[in-house]
Length: 139
Ligand SMILES: [Zn+2]
Image (spheres, rainbow, N blue to C red):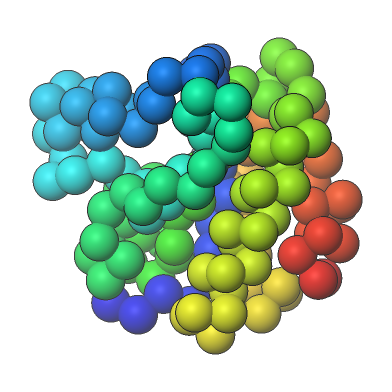
């Protein structure tokens, strides 16, 4: 189904220079029984640079936000921002990715939400700089 809004997550797991998306995909498919990784895209460190990596097919329903998986695009930052702050370079790269998705899907800044808006969670973490992030994506 067409995505009408973007929902921002953290993975609640630590990042590192090795790509994490394969192990997240494996966890979601083999342990949670999802058809594919639950997110539509992630932002994580690969080697020395932060990259945006495609998760599941963008037309598929996600598996990331109860009640919003059909129309919500799931974008996740690899990291645990309940415990530490997001690296600036990761925030900047993630903003670039989210802006690209907004443009591609025709989603305005007012339709980008933190996961905690919809479910009982602090995702993307209480230390995630939400207000700054919203300004950076043009909101
Ligand atoms: Zn979340």
